[in-house]
Image (cartoon, rainbow, N blue to C red):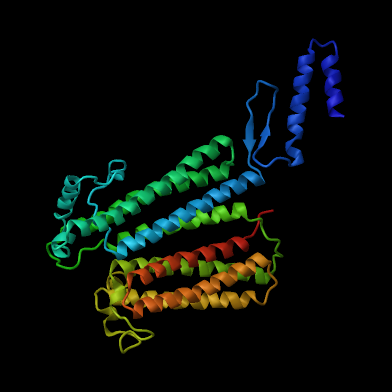
Length: 407
């Protein structure tokens, strides 16, 4: 046995003391503990006696803790996306004309401070063209909407950075996970800068245009797209750490189903991203009928801009048409995925995930059609925008359930 052997070595005439024997025995016990799989957190491993520092290594319990944290962070990102959509629908996004990381965390308190903030807003195109009759009370509403969105963004940043420091010090990350969390934290910072870059495009004076001031649809799509990428990466990583992998036989049909699910998830992401162009150009107000656009299946002004490619990103008619096609295509792909999966024997969680994805797809299409026919009411439009992220959530869950586990 190992322990008696260590005792005999320590008691021999080699100049080693009884204390040294005890240290060796403790070291042997410490090395034996991890192999038993005991404990609920990261396992402590001590090597080299009392003078060595204790280190931790990730195990199932620590992975679950990190997974819950990342899923919680993805929930905060979801809240930011929803709040950003409401801010856009209430036309509040251009009310704060400055960007300060710390200074703007405290909103105006006195009437003089509010009037000073309002006077700054009055110097920019949105007030001059759209809101010349706006009162201070009305300005406070749109200001608080944008302020809340920015403060939520700061909360998201803290939710990523502070636990990262804690888990890192506790040794909960392996080498691969360290790279992932650093990337996620960096992406949060980039997202904040991109948000201000987007807002700036709506504050610029455009003497040649008397159209409604709005942010660039390209920057809006970039801001939303980066938020969705952050959301997907956080949710995927969190779910794969939390959910035990399913035992799946690597059959030809399973490989096809997995590829089908990946393609469907990509289509859902692209459909959600196209919604940013719809919002940026107010394209939902162009044709408020379904299934036809006006009296035609294909409207006359679909290719009104030249060159033709410009229509895809700048023509409100084309943008709405593309969003319709992508939405119907996503619904068809998800329906096909559901029918294909019914012919296979899948674990219970995977079947539930695919069923939820399918139900959400039909709900989302119904929300989109209702929003269009009712001329884009703010509550319904906000629900439709939130539904796109919910649909993406179920797509990520399906992919997590069908993932191939490395041997």
